Image (tube, rainbow, N blue to C red; front, top):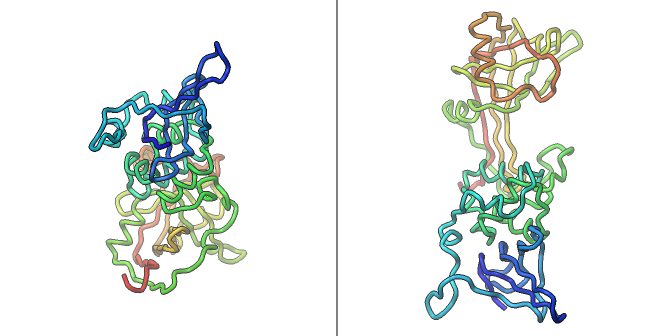
Length: 306
């Protein structure tokens, strides 16, 4: 038995007078199209991993290609899906944890949904369903997605979320490369979570904060009287980094400069309007601190032969 994405799996009922069951094949686990398959059943709307038995057969719904072999549907071949593809696979509202992690990693790598689905040998509509609904993909589907994204099943499931990054193996021959000022700005000038290093009466402290970069100025919100607020009126260090566990790569950028408490009403409105997120820590955090870097340095880990 061989199938293509978009084909129909039909299971004939062995009992006389009862109906048969059918569903669309939305995921392949072998390049040659042999079982098992991820099937979206027409009667329940569920997607399950199926090992077809002797009472099952594949119906090729597309026109034959060369040598009489069936081809994938036009949408699957082109890597596109209709607006209702995700809804067609179920009506559960909102993405699940796995879907959010898949979408985030795909977008971080600059991959389209169509390209990711092609790499994972999965129907684009099924990938849309995983990303947009509380899906529970089969282990084989997760393995294919992890392989397509260069990560692990554990990472897609959220395993190790409470562990510090960098527990994987180092590259065989790693090399540290200095980043140029423009490369540092490119990595810093987005938004996310960075670490602010300040001096306190009890000694140095390093704390994570949600930050923004506006007009070459780093800014973050905190609570009045908090440790990060102590940065105002002092020289501080601010660091951001990223670790790619799957590829054993990473980079870090360090900004050093004076910090101050923002008090101008116009600047405060601009910061609030352009903020991408409220502080993850929650609570009343309406004190804005800005840092204007006077020194910007960074390094990244790359293979020695790169």
